[in-house]
Length: 191
Image (cartoon, rainbow, N blue to C red; front, top):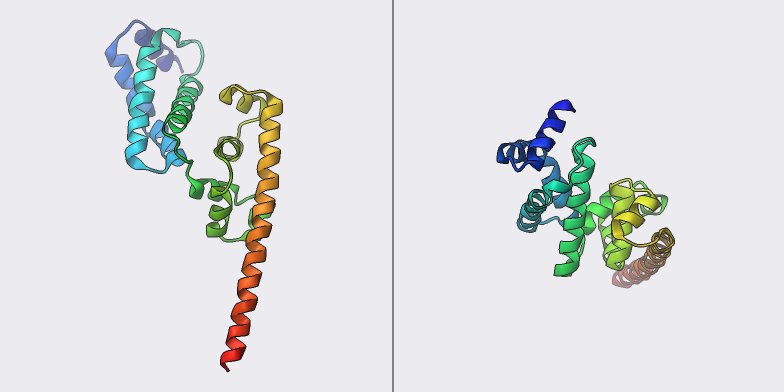
């Protein structure tokens, strides 16, 4: 911690060596966080560069008395979410499905492919709160602060996401049963 504090003090003074040492220390962690959200290497690399550019531009704002990772993590998430909004891209459905697989509903579904189908039908704002909650372990308060919305709005998004997941699941399940029934009929006719 003391070594990091010295690096942060040096960075605030504009010393490039300190910046490169922090970059080396955190680059893999930052890239992994971005990649897990956007699931595209090229896009993740673009966002990654923007994150460290933001760190350097805002070096004077860094509090050297606090751990650097929470600050860098916040910049990484903000930059990633801003990029998603700018580019109007969707968040990685596969990763979200994988992360949500612990939930009761998705455990019942069993298949990652089915979970992907459900999650890709959710509005991006609802997917976003699910990612923050399930993947990042955010509390309601942290999500509200991160997304710059009220806790009530976060609660509402999570509630709607849950209801939508259930609705979509029921539709897919019903469609699957209909297809299975028709398939069985076709099999019987063929005998």
